[in-house]
Length: 159
Image (cartoon, rainbow, N blue to C red):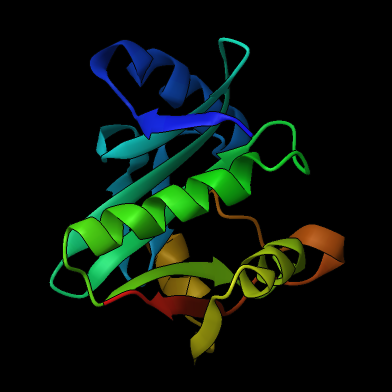
C-alpha cells in the first residue's frame, strides 16, 4: 500500500501536473460549480518516493466532496487508499457524508466506487450540459463511446 498524506506546498506542482495529465487541466465542473482542483485541499499517495495518486476535495455543510481522484497506475490500491483516507478525514471533521459526482459514461469509476461502499444517491439527467457551459472542453462522447449527458452522485455516510 502507498503512504497517503495531506498534500503540502512542495507537492503542488506535481499535483497540478497529474491533474492536467488526467483532466486536460485543473478545472473541474460538476453540479453547476467550477472548481480549480489545484487549489483544493488534497491527499497524495506516494510509493517508493514517487507520487502515485491524488485526491482533491471540498468541504462544506453537505460533507466532504471528492472532486478528483487519480491513481497512477490504476489497479494497485492507490485509489482505494486515497478514498479510505478521505473517509477518515470526513470522520475526523465530523462530516455526515463523503460524496462525489461522476458522469454516466464513467462505468469504470462507478464500479470502483460501488465496490468500495459508496451508493448511488442521485442522478441528474442532462446535467452535463450545464457543466459544459462552465467548462466547454468536456467532450460529447466519453468512455466506451457513451454520450456524456448525466451526472451521478455517489455517497457514503460517515457520521
